[in-house]
Image (cartoon, rainbow, N blue to C red; front, side, top):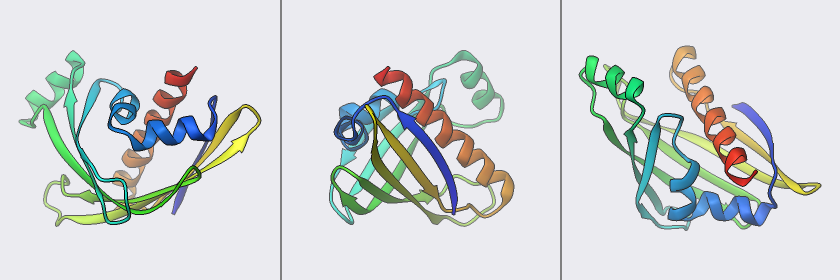
Length: 152
């Protein structure tokens, strides 16, 4: 497991709401240049989060079009643990890697009070190789930066 550690300037209950509601997720979840629309959220162990991520930034759109990739992709996560307001764990379906069979990847997020904010400790199970793991970590770090900006 790899770890990303950030302090978000909002209380744990606020961070929990932004991480576990369709409205909250759509406001920060996507990496820069993309938007996220939640298609379905079933907030319970074995419940699913299904969302569509769409490229909006002209550079992202151009890159996807040049490489014959769709501008929108649907993603699915299955919650494995939910303990309000301090733990969210889910398995992501990794089905977008060319020439690689789909598999699942675990992420565990712990939310701890830290003064006036929340310390977010995200443990991320590695992907099938170092390059894809680094891409995943960069994306998750960008999302956490977006969350911090949203509540600032």
